[in-house]
Image 1: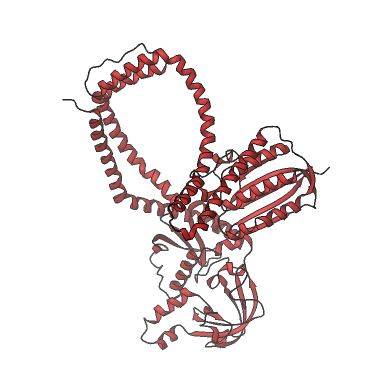
Image 2: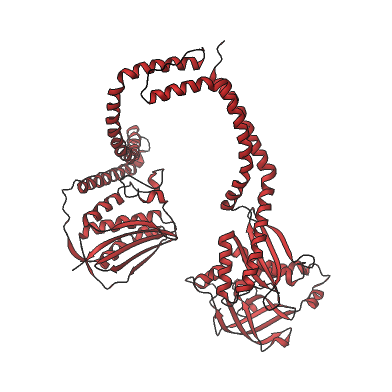
Length: 608
C-alpha cells in the first residue's frame, strides 16, 4: 500500500511543532512573569545605588538634579526624583510661588511670614505656556487665600483661592492627594474635633510676591503627572505617619493604573548636609522595549531545548525520510550547474518515486532547450522588471478610481437611488480629475526625463515665494491643526531659477510634510545663506522615515508605507518630479531624519 510522504511529514511536523509551542506557552505562563519582574526589580535596585552615589557627589542645583534624573530615565526607563524629609520634591526652586502672609486664622505665629509654595502640587506646568491660563490670578501682586494644616511646625497647603469664598469653587486650586488623604484620616477619629486637635487647620491671606516657572528643558521634570501624583500620595502618607520606614530604609511597593502594573522604589538616604531624604523611583513592568530585551534572555533557554529536539528530529529525518530527498537534492544541484548527466534511481512507489521520475523527465527536456531558454529568460527578465515597475504603480493608482466610476455607473444604470444622481456624477467627475492629475504628472515626469525640456531661468524674491506657498496650503494645515513656523533669517534676496517649477517643488515638499505630520504637530520652513547659495529647509515634527526608505522616496510610484492606500499618501510622483526639477537646476537636495522629525532641503543659486 502506498504511504504518502506528505502525510508522514505532516504528522511528524505537526506533533513536533505542537510540542514546542506547548513548552513555550507553559514556560511563559508559569515562569516568565516572575522572571521578568525579578530581573526588572534587580536592575532598578542596582541602578538606584549608582544614582545615589552620583547624586550625593554632584547634585547641587536644579539643572544638575534634572540632568541626573533625565539620564536615569533614558538609561533605565524609570522615573526618579529626590524628596526631602517632608516628602517635597527637592531642587524645585524653579517652580514655586512666594506669598507674604498678613492675616492668619488658627495659628497667629505664622502671620507676617513669607510662605514658599511648590506649584507642581497645584498647577500643571503647561498651563503657564497656554494661550489662556485657567488661573490668571497666580501672578505677582495678587491677593490670595490659602488653607492647610499645621504638621511638624510647618504649614502644609491643601487649597488656594482668591478669597475664602473661592476655596471650594471651580476656580480654586488644591492638592488633591492631601485632600483625599485628609478625608480618609478623619474617619479614623471619633470626632472631627479630635482630628483638629491633632492636625490644626490654618486659614491665611496674603499677597503673592514672586512666581517662578521653569524654562526650556527644565519644565520636563514637571510634566509626568502620573509620577507626580504618586510623589504627592507618598508625601501625604509620610506626613500623616502612614509610611513605615522603621524596619527597612529601602522599600518596594506595587501600584496599578489603567491596567498597567508599576513598581515604586523608596530609598531613605541622608543628603550631603546630613538631613533625611528619599530617593523615589517608579517603573512600569510592561514597556515594550524592555520586555523585548527580557524575552531575549528568557528565550535562550527555549532555544537550547528546541535545538535538542531539532537535532533528534534531524537524525530521524536523515535515517528514514530525508535520505531520498538528499539524493534528489544532489541531482538537482547538478542540474542547477547545467549538468544533466546523472539520473535519479526510482526505488519507491510513493510521492518520492513520482518526483524522481518527473525530475528525470524534466532533466531530459531541459538539456535539449537550455541554451535557448537562457537567452529568452534573460531578455524576459529585463523586460519584465521594467514592465512590472511601471504597471504596478499605474495599475494601482487607476484601479480605485475606475472601480468607483464603475460602481456609480452600475447604480445609475439600475436606477437605484435616482435622487442621488448628482452625487454620483460628482463622484465620477472627482475620480476622473484624479486620473487626469495622474496622467498629467506622468507626462510631466516623462517630459523632464526625455532630456529635451529646457528650463527657463529668471530672478525672483525667494521670501515672497515661500510666503505665497504657505498661504496656498494654510487651509490643509489648519484642517489637521498643524503649527507652521516660517523662519527667513536672511535679508530679502533674489534667486536665479524657474519660479514656476520651484513653486512646484515647494508645494510638493510642503504637501508631503502635511500628509505625514501627525495632528497638532509643527512644520518649520526656513531659509539661510551659504556663500553664493540659499538653502531652503522644510522640517515636519513627530514622524520619521525608516533609513531603508530614505534613498527610495525619490523614485516614481514609491511610497514608504507598503499598503499604498489612497488615504495614507499620494500617488508617489511628487518627489520624483521635484527630483528632476532640482537636477535640471543643478543644485543639491536631499532628506534626512532629525531628532523628532524629517528634514527636506534644497539649494538655489543667488543672484550674481
